[in-house]
Image 1 (tube, one colour):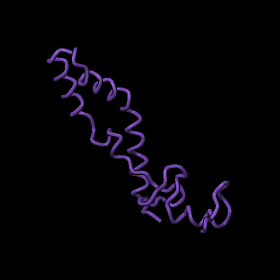
Image 2 (cartoon, helix red, strand yellow):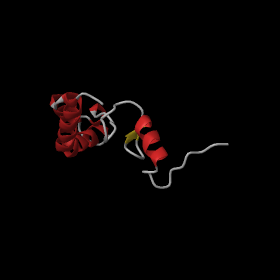
Image 3 (spheres, rainbow, N blue to C red):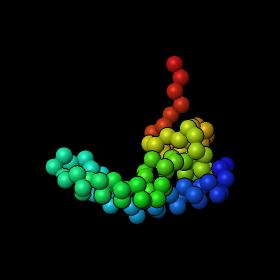
Image 4 (cartoon, rainbow, N blue to C red):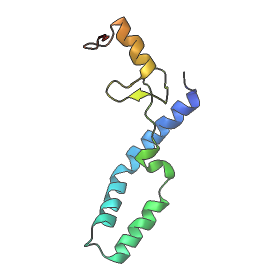
Length: 101
């Protein structure tokens, strides 16, 4: 079980990322486009640097939805490798079977 404070901090980061996502996309498009003037590109870079650090999507951590474990989280299930194994063996995940060969 992860610390409650870490889980809460990650949730706050998700909210900040969602709040700034549209504006960040606009600014990055201005910076990326070769036809934009140099002054406009410089202003976009300055504004992008002025945004909060947590506004970048790379700062959000994928966590287990059940207990918040930060490592070994599988995207397809939203579970950590440990929780996935437990639930698969109990039969809670439809279509997942234990394999042996």
